[in-house]
Image (cartoon, rainbow, N blue to C red; front, top):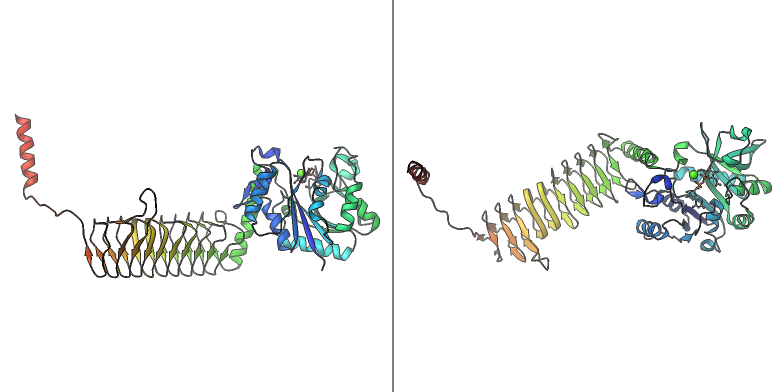
Length: 466
Ligand code: UD1
Ligand code: CA
């Protein structure tokens, strides 16, 4: 197979988005619109992918690079928007030396499936000509280029504004997605002239040029796949379709999703069988969830790993966290980056962790902050425990051995260590290391004054009477 390259048109402004942000950067399920066609091109094995940028070129390039740090991308700049042919031409230098096919995609068409693009390449193989295209049949084709056929064969595309009344009745439309032989593409683009109703360089002129020298391949795609994004209503509509597609794929693979309309699962998330996802759960940024996991309502997991059999109760937020088998988290737990839980760890309501490694079977069930902490196995961390990890300048480590008991409302002023089996009495401010098996307690001795309440009342009554 010859090499495949791709050009993705991302230069448009998208006036109807009514936004300061370039259209292709608006997010759909956590990624910019243009990340989807770019990803599809990479999945098809394109060895060079050229995003053509124009409006807000620097921002668009930066965002794309951030989403594809290791991809073979070469950016091209279209300085002025003079039409789709001019936009593709901008990619010519970036693809100098490329022999084979060039896939042309729109950066604002997010729902096109890999299978459809594979079908396009197969149609190109079958026809054997210089170009193959994707068409779509629309009940209302207003605004689209019409596919004109002669004797059943594609002969050219006529833009809506250039159509005769007869051509306007055609419902087969050009989706704007093509596979073109590089050897033909650059030569043909050089010949295109802006002689049409809009005075633009029309990429669609390629179709007639290719049809003159051989058959043009065409695949028909569903309109939901070829639909672009022009305003925020369409953005939400496309997001909805993508969400449904992703959720259905997980459900078919054995994941239970209680309310698929409100589960926001990004592309590329792994979820094991028999895992149950509650309403309004978000799974983002490459999160991996094991088997038999329960994720309760409103939880948000970003770039996290959750192992088998863990139960995440509602409204928990996990970010770059690793959670072992059979843990119980939440409700309302917050696991920040660098949290690493072994098996059977329990973290309850209003527990926050950051850079905390917590050993097997340890528990912190209520109102606790564990930051910059190495905690052994089988520890019991009482309600209201706080690691004082920050001295205003530097962060310091708290280290607890195995089987440590920390009484409620204790502060661990780092750097500090509590050895294996150490015991910290409730209300203690731990400022010195606690050796293994020792008790640390630092509270003021309790004073009891019997009859004090009645005596106080009597005093107050006297004052009033006097
Ligand atoms: C184009 C096709 C039309 C097809 C329709 C499908 C042409 C001449 N017409 O029309 O046959 O039915 O798409 O949606 O190609 N862009 C640039 N630089 C430019 C011009 C456009 O990057 O100079 C980008 C736009 O941002 C957009 C895409 O190319 O993502 C399509 O451009 P647009 O002007 O919307 O083309 P249409 O008029 O819709
Ligand atoms: Ca358009």
